[in-house]
Picture 1 (cartoon, rainbow, N blue to C red):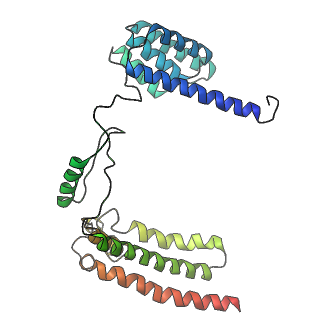
Picture 2: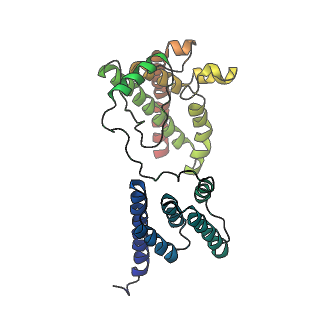
Picture 3: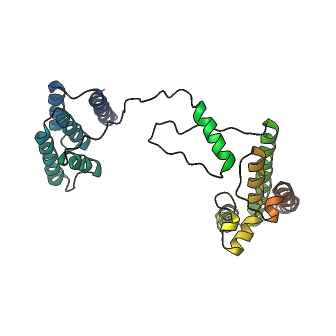
Length: 286
């Protein structure tokens, strides 16, 4: 198999995967306890075998620093910088440079990628209740914290399954209407490339000038008027209301009658686009 055409590429891929796994294992060991001499010796061998691998240099620096050998850790950075400059003509990465700066200040080495768990990841009942209370009083609630802390708290509707299904039905109704509009444009233009040229200038205001991200009253006057009467804005405002979530529609007439407009707009678009598309299709088929 070593003479097979694919063998060289596959062997290189497997060697890279094995080296990455070794790095992950060493990083896990450093996260658990200070490095012992066998681990430091292993890292020195790995750095000698892969001198352009910056992650290995960083691991060795952390291991030496954790063992109280700060001067040797700084020397490893100097060697890495020299090798990278001679072989690749580049400087160390920002991550490796930040580690070097921390060692110069004699700070603790940056934490490993596998932090020790501080709390259980099972259950967020208290946090969910708190977020629900905040959402009842504010338009937007921002959750912040380090990656893996459990910020994904889930999604739920407030006012029953029936209203949630009604909101989904409004979204599907608008999708059907826009599908008919797209079919009509596709039948009117001479070739597929023209579809993008024609549809994009029409679709961009529909998505950008709406209440999906920004309340219409926060936009300039004429842009806010377009956003307030946008079919997408009506559907979004009505769906938010049916889901029981605060919206961004404002106090305009379209916002107060979002449900009626969310039904009227798609039906009007279908009433115009569907017959026109059918007639055009039949005319092209003759």
